[in-house]
View 1: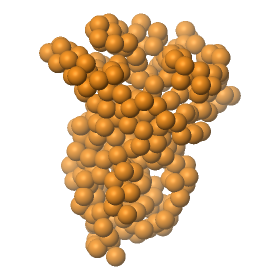
View 2: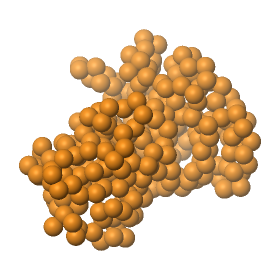
View 3: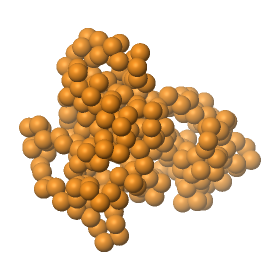
View 4: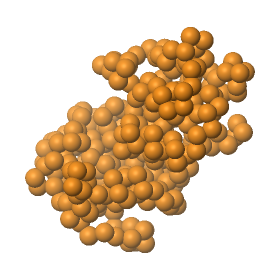
Length: 287
């Protein structure tokens, strides 16, 4: 059954995301912050292939530098599916890593989500999207949006999602040479935690502040420098807690011009905002 199931050995996309807005509107008793944010995918992707394993083992074709195999989110996602369903099948996972680690654009979370979604199909487990999102949340707060697969307005701790359509603009992203510790930012005394809640129409009208930006730029000079350099071309913004910063452009030409100007100094990416995850575009094309 597993050998002939369509999709084994194919490359499956694990796209990056941007937070187009991030407001912290409160804090729960357990310390988690209550957020409002907008997620949009971009067409930069890791690519993941899955190969059937006859002995029931879950393992990586090649481990990522600095990440123990047992800690890799794709391995954890596959093992979580097995534990949840009692599935006895195995898999060898191959990850082509293109997204920067620790950049705040969701690389590891997206890899985990693609693993959940694709193995649910390949192993014929038939779990619902809602169930996969719940499993994903136990792996990380950003995993559910990648399982969900569409640009979304998010509330709660980021898990309450409703679809939203936002302009699919070109973006230039700078990855500063630092890794922002999300826990450090969210525990900072000076972080704003009482922003007023807004509506989707407020966001659409231009309210897209990120409540983390002042804390991050004060503590990480390279993020501040990236914001300054990128702002020469368009409004520079922070995605999530960073470290990546981004700017949107109305045309590919203007985005490409900024990209070319910045790439001598920075690790920089040129991408297109998209409302539907390429993972789900591929699933639909294959069905």
